Image (cartoon, rainbow, N blue to C red; front, side):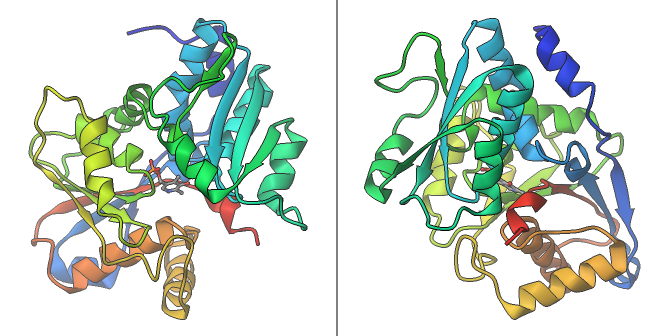
Length: 302
Ligand SMILES: *Cc1c(COP(=O)(O)O)cnc(C)c1O
């Protein structure tokens, strides 16, 4: 157990508590199924949810190695860049973000925050962005000694380690854990730490995400073989960041019933999937389900 760098420990001590909240709903009592939401959205207003879990040890590695600049990549609404820019600013580290696509004429709220927190933005074409994706863990060309590269979504062993800590905070026995997937890094972290009897399910926020399964396998420790997980691909609502009136209606209804805000890119699709699976009889009576609220509400401001 490496101890946290003092600056990171100070930042973490300002965080809120991620609670495990029971959901009360007639469909659940009818099926004798218990559902909880692990509220990682409550951790921090900016470094929210899984972005903190994934960044925690990446940031620690950078501080311990004496890096002064964090370099990463993401879309123009990226929760990852948003969390990274804020964390870098809080920790006294410079940040550089490669942003997919041309610099937009109107700067959206996410980009405005990145600029406010001092992130240097480098807009790159979609084909250049795809090339950056090839630089997975740890390294990319043209990096200076003081710079630390974080691959898209933070995908790395250090990210998995931070995500795994979520499991230590769940004091109940449960049969299913479900999470929304972008790069699948959070899913991989959950799989790596799940109790043996627990089935871990990722809900893909992307369309045609067959590559996700291999990405997750690659992230998982190569000398261990995990079988108790899957990725469901039927809940993308047309693709990444696509939505529908049905999804929006579901999110409104969910907020009205449970006072928990969701966003349409990830967590809305996740909870929609959970209730759809409940209605289809996917879970067995007596089972306990934990759903991870990965936060990300900043991305819904537009
Ligand atoms: C980034 C993000 C995800 C996806 O996480 P991955 O580790 O890339 O799969 C899920 N939910 C929210 C709210 C996010 O911001």
